[in-house]
Image (cartoon, rainbow, N blue to C red; front, side, top):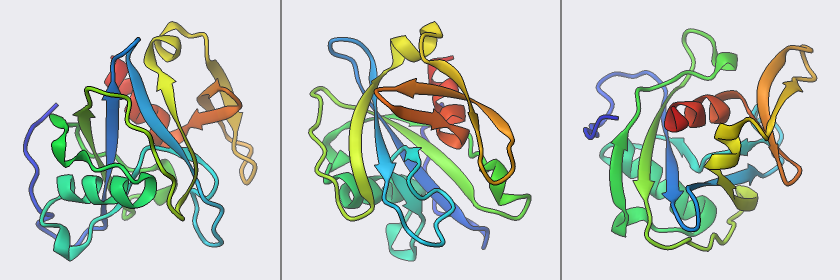
Length: 171
């Protein structure tokens, strides 16, 4: 992981997500179920809190903090920044699509999310279960019938970019 957080230097579409980690009783990561919204390609999916960079953010780390506050009512300002991962692109966005930078934060206590209008639910995923293979499955995307590796936890299917980011965290 890298610790540097700078404002975007070009006009590419950028976003940031927060990988909020808590390790008691075992390592867990905070996830949310996105609200159902027309025109949102990730509507209803399980995701990390986050969203698009706005000019007032200053840098992408601030974007991740702002979006986590808006979506889940959690202020990450007082938490420890572990670093940032390399930016990734959702496979659905194509070569000119959005670039997503994950920032990992550690919290001493299991923060209690309060879902805003962009989130239907939030939960803590035990990373030891994900790493063990106990949650492994395959998700078939309805629009294309393409199959993707997934985890299923308490009825929530974690796949796509969220799964790819968490695979990097677990590795």
